[in-house]
Image (cartoon, rainbow, N blue to C red; front, side, top):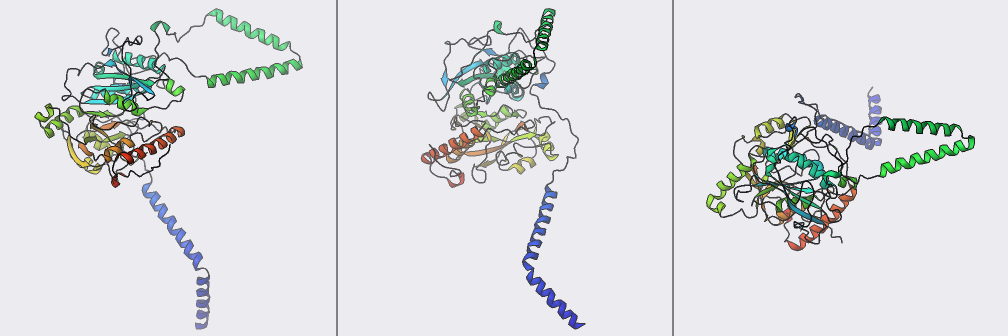
Length: 518
């Protein structure tokens, strides 16, 4: 018996030595598989336990549904002959703020002049500065509803996009009294100046066919059939080939044809155009959107010393503008404030959030926090760019009790690990311009301006008591590879210029992606 045990032990030892590497490899694979399965189970996206409110697409201006425009009154002060035409030669045309006269864009300020806050001093109001293309204009009514202050809107209007914009603006201005807060500025490429049709040039979109038209078409069809029957075998085959060729040519013309005039928009009521997908000159000609030109124009047109440069889809919480003004007076004192003093190298960051599809945008912190707890809201771009808007002290901000004032929560720097942070903030014209070389289509368009703030050693004061919120994010993931390539190249050149202009601050991570190209 003992001999059998010794033999079995010897063979087991020999087998173990021979296959030890294989056994270790199998054990390693099994261990990794278990770990990955546990990780996948832990992070598996489970269905929310809450009841869905609705699976609807967010539509700006929906609160105006059922209201009809006032045909005899406009709440906007149009200038330069608008909305009927553009009276060229009666107003100055400016270059864009950063690029100047050598830049490719031109600006028409105050095509619409806001009147509601015209008599307020620059210390007693704060401006919401934003930009848009025609298809996003209607978002301005959501901002006007909740923003207690002047609004500066820069519109990109190449060619007939001006016509589309005027149709929408003229309609909104007849619908909503809060549009009196809004000043509109136009910008466009020098190659494609804005165009607008005269009222008599509008073509009716509905044509009722007459009986004569129907009869003539029937006759034409009958003649074609008769001619076809009279053909012999050879000529019939040639005719079929010719018809196919002509059909393909007509299809290709239809595919390649670009719309060269503005569509006639129709409005059932004050809630917006009947067609949501508005054709524009920019999209038809695949033009990139110079978003930073619009941002610079909107802030440059501001008449107040403080403003927030925000995106047009961001809706403010209740009372954000007056709360900010009260906070500044409390921190600075009435005397210094009335003398025009501002905080040097300091901007005031407003937290950004977004809601899930089918959820209404919240306007107070208590509602927002409850939505975040139930996974119906999150900080902005959490799913697609987690580092872009995750601000320092996020968890602290969520845990702090809601209150009716706006106040500083903490002072941060845009330094590592927040060196890729792109916040929106209350600032002044002391801050550097946004780089007009970077487009929206190429992404990361605010990154260089934020890096420059870091190199200038700015303080970023994160505010509690107010926020901006975005509706459910668009799931469209289409990318413009050409625009992204251009942004990367231009970004690298901007970084190279920063290295020559500023002393190095290692925490700003200025070396990230830097390569000077000409």
